[in-house]
Length: 539
Picture (cartoon, one colour):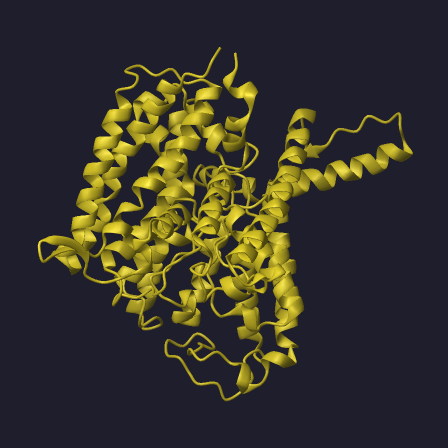
């Protein structure tokens, strides 16, 4: 049985064609603010429809198996990211003197930068190469498209396609397994298409709730700059654990009330969405019976407490000389106040800053409420540790995932026990159920491969930086957090790529390499790397 690549690419065409529907959002945004800004999106919609139609005709009745599912999912994510580069490339392209020229020069006019931004959006990484994030340099339509790409990629483009396209329902199980964020996806209903719809309904419902509450803070006077536009934009990128923001300084630009409100929504985004479905059916006990969910809350609680203690007692953050130039918000007032006292000799501020950054890193959202490059070494390394945890299986979060760490810890405990009691039979259990040994081996294989790619990628980036010029332009911690942030779909790292920095300074080849890291990280490695094996293509 050889791979039916025609069937795979036919379904890629179907998904690509319907990407044009999503472009309605930036087109409407453009019509509200600047009608001329819709041109790049109209062109992109026509290109998506054209490419999608051509690919769709490769197979009139595609039959999807496990192999075709891997190819279709991997190719779909790359195809939509390629199409998604067009608005960035065309944003300021105009006719001047009878020839095409850019009315305003931006960093996104370079193809590698546009592809980086698009892949970062769809994979919900949140890393950026935008030199200037502002309404003066970019249209509101483009910045809304940037936010929307993360929302589309959050729950999964293929999961959405399975939910709304009847022709994908037959092979939907294979497709969702290939795309699912975690060891597997729980089948909530007898039909896989209904499961996909249930997940997307929960995802969309929580997104709308956050948008309404954010704008409600504005109406209530607690968030003066949280306009309807900002509320919608941040709703898109919170539930997707994306982290893009139309504000250059991320969530630091908003009041403490906004920051506290976003925290539980980030935590919801890192939770298995199947639990929300059970909650809507009245099974609230499922939340607290779930071993992974309890571990998830415990990890966040412990890391937050450690982080807050480090910030509160850090003398390096106590002096006025280390305070950020941008205004900070202390307490829940709507207006920024000038610091007349040390930043973190305030329990509420220390707790808020610690919890926000910890939740942002564990869930791989990547938002920030301050430049944590100014934190002490222990506090920063706490965030580096959080980069390798990840959200729950079935959530929109990236990273290794809590459930994998749980299984690894339980299996190590089992090995220690059987070392002393060699005749004992002791299965690894999760939520009271014994796990199949193949599943345990798969988790070990994924984790080992994840760290192998991590270390190899560090070497690649450091070597490329040395060939590009000064080898000391990329420090070890920058290289480590760059790879962790792109492979784990987190976004910000430390130093050069801190929350107020960008990936703009990297070479073109490094950016393309990081595009691949984001791609394989979002699809959890195997659906992409399996395509490189001989056994996949041979009969």
